[in-house]
Amino acid sequence: MILSVLSSPALVSGLMVARAKNPVHSVLFPILVFRDTSSLLLLLGLYFSAMIFPVVHIGAIAVSFLFVVMMFYIQIAEIHEEVLRYLPVSGIIGLIFWWEMFFILDNETIPLLPTQRNTTSLRYTVYAVKVRSWTNLETLGNLLYTYYSVWFLVSSTIFKALSWGVSLLK
Amino acid sequence: MMLEHVLVLSAYLFFTDIYGLITSRNMVRALMCLELILNAVNINFVTFYDLFDSRQLEGNIFSIFAIVIVAAEASIGSAIVSLIYRKKKSTCINQSTFLTK
Image (cartoon, rainbow over all chains, first blue to last red; front, side, top):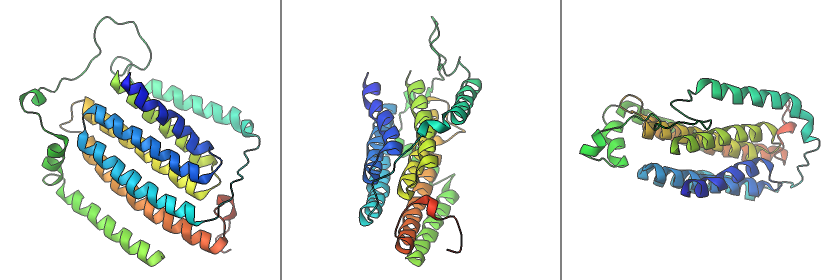
């Protein structure tokens, strides 16, 4: 129940990002989506990621877009005339995507359709967590600084290029 | 049950924000839909990492690198949008059809 309560604002807000008349609203609705994402991560038990997602997405990205959209005088009128004009072709493409999803995902492992089954669904039980439970931060640090340390340093060079690019653009 | 809910949510957000990205006439809205697309992909990665065997597939690690890229393109994108607004005084996507003007 708590899963539905936490994820249903994300469904509405995701649509309102695309359909909001005011561009400021279309920057504020993703904040709700990021909050729901973080709460889903809490339910999955990934506490560090649940902390980092709002800090980065809301605190850095949404705030910078809010700066951009508040600085400019953006016309509110985005009149969507004849939205249904594109519905036949785009509806067919959307149905193809929908069919592809059901075609790829095996219904025994990932049950998307409601099926009558008496047995519990197949899940892989990780027994290591019952011996010693690692926190999310420990698992990330165990891999990120040892096996994936080169990629970690590469991401720092990405940020270096980013800072140079932004300073040159301004 | 948790797996299906989160996967359907991430697929819904992905496709809804692809729709928002394609049909938006405002640059800032398009960039915001792009952020939500990448967020949906991140949820997908992290869910599969959490609920399945993850010795080989490290979804949480990849989601960290995906967040790095998201933050980078968000800042560069907002800088480009502000520069285009400074030159053309509007953020309509349809106006930038020619490279020279």
